[in-house]
Length: 285
Ligand code: MN
Image (tube, rainbow, N blue to C red):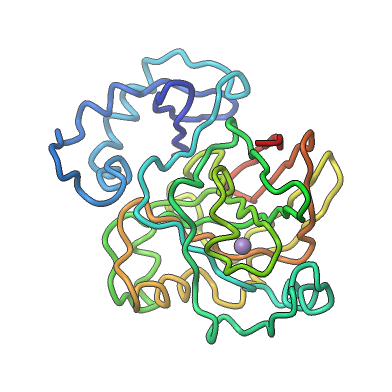
């Protein structure tokens, strides 16, 4: 099942190139009062809503997915988690390029740990990326994003995929420079998630997916998730050994070689096998 959020917070089921409006299924979500439950309410209740989503899609005429404004399929994560240097070929390029490394001694992910991006960075592909600090290098990082489906605390790798609701394409946009990653990667709109959430049952092995990112039609990054240093299961084990992952939490699994700068007017097109493709426009903030 491919679920998108679009236009004025409509919920859509995507089949082929058509989005069916299933917003009415959200009526089954529990009514909430302050304090709101932690995490994304839709992702937390996805299994319960699935039959109603299917039922409504059957009666909804639908429109071309290209005609809607795609928002982030996750609305309310408690955390956006990043994995630093999680492909060997990206480590190699970072060591050679001081525009990436900035004099830092680059550590293995087992030493560096993970980082968090501000939740306010999150946008969908239809919203685009608004660049700040145009005098500095602003890079694309195309990544597989895993979306957590239920609270996960101290989860071993053998059971880790049981906690995944689905997958999406993530863009971990980055200002290069001397500041800590959590700051440089937390500019508004610097986390793009889309084009939709593909439920986990459609992805047999998240660690065997081709991924590609083009800028203005030119291929910049092209790899496969089999080259992840810490694969999806290990990232979930690693993250949940420190903090509880909540429904809707987003793990951006890291980027392969080929990161590079974008400028206002560029269009990034990211593709992941089994997930889909999304085009994201870049503008000045
Ligand atoms: Mn990244």
